[in-house]
Image 1: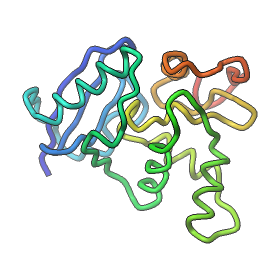
Image 2: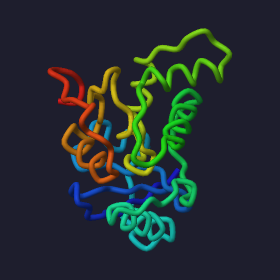
Image 3: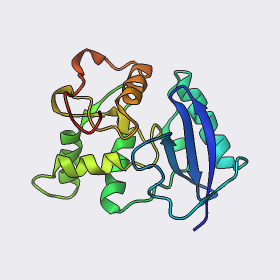
Length: 180
């Protein structure tokens, strides 16, 4: 499959967007962990795709403090069934709110008629989200409010949560972990 890319200048720095020509397949912060790992092969630079115009408009409104709905963009993140299910749950986290890996694990267990689900497995899926910001993985925190696990880096996660008006008083920087 052929993928196309373009760039967007954001308050967080340069973003790279990827598309299959009709759907948004990726959005990565510069230097992000797992950058482009779900897009196989080379990406051809192509700025003029309608999906890129729609994504730029969405991002412009988001960074201006708006609350554009995820559903207005045609998304096609590449991943297996488990990851897709986790990413769908991420899309349901309301703007300006956070949830935990454990809560997502409980939802995944309930949907699969299982007694439990590993929060670490959920963390792996959240961390491999290929459409950062739009699929809001930055809204997931560790148990007790730890700001851990953002592939784009802890500073970017904090800036996104502050932009959305999240009450940061109950959240804290981890002493060690994947976000540092």
